[in-house]
Image (cartoon, rainbow, N blue to C red; front, side, top):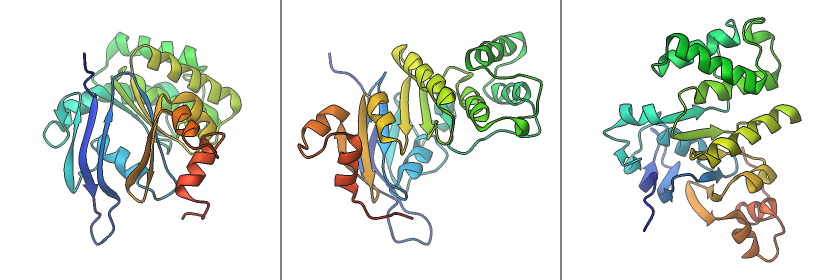
Length: 249
């Protein structure tokens, strides 16, 4: 039986106002249920624009996206209920405690009362989050990153979007996050992940797409893409071969 994509991108294009360049240039791509899909690319390649569209935060100029069978153009509210978003920038209120932050974000997903408290307590225990003792501004970068992840998964989304989830954190926090991503992915959560850490992406992602200048220039399983390029021994080699070594803004 043929699998149906949980995300189907069709001829997606984005041109920003007052720009003649295409930030996203006629992309078509399918992502399947239970995949851990890595969207990789250099700075300015179109990753953030693509993720912002898929998360309903940005409207495309043309084309469409179906998420779990729902059109992004007409069913944005319904789509928001089944997706989780963990942005690269820490999206927390620094004057609040971790528990207060998580209570606020949980309420946005319709969670409340003792049920919400129990979910927060479970995640705080799992990720070693101090719930009430300090304001978030007083916590380490690794702790904030763990809280940032928790805020995006409280409602146990069907699809999780992760933008650089382990950037700038300690090894221990990174391991906790990566182990948990493996766990929820194995339990059926579809993950769309961006990162500049090629070794991490190679180990974490079941399939990747490399984007540059708004176009998908390669896609497939990491090991197969590497094997098909005999001069490459890892994903970083392949990435540099396809996108070049010139510095990006």
